Image: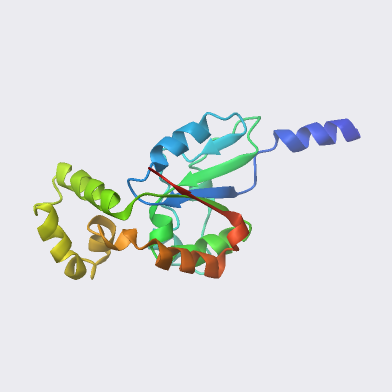
Amino acid sequence: MTPLLRRVKKYLRPPPRVGFVVGGAMKGGTTALSAFLDQHPEVRMAAGKEAHFFDTDFHFAGAKPDYAAYHARFAPGPTTRVLGDATPVYLYLESVLPRVAAYNPRMRWVLLLRHPVERAYSHWNMVRQTGDEPLPFLDALAAEPERLATDRGRRLYSYLDRGFYARQLRRLFAVIPQERVLALRSE
């Protein structure tokens, strides 16, 4: 094989693993950012936006995770140079960060952080509209500490808790160097 052909083939090969995560605040603009990034010819985002691979305990029950199911969420084209996963909850759930770091120690993160009160109200409103939240906003906030005791509660009713960004960033920086993280305010 000629050197020129080797160089061309290098650019036509799909990336071996996901290179960045769009995370941060639920209701912070991650859907829009994911859609914009997916329009770039060298970027391929996970199909369906949120892959939810690293926050699904089932994938990590064995001795070694099978990443084939994760990689199947991507359809890289001939010009794809980087794969991205936009799953906002990755920053929030404690078990996720070590899993991501083990998968790709060089993973980069783009975080969108929205004003915590506006984010909490938008989150509550979304859950209310799906029919999963029967409580008025202030009552839902009062019930949140008890609701956080279950996995479903942490995922669904974490209106205030998800807004404590400093705690989440400390956990992230414990496993990912700060220079691999771009944190943006989403207003």
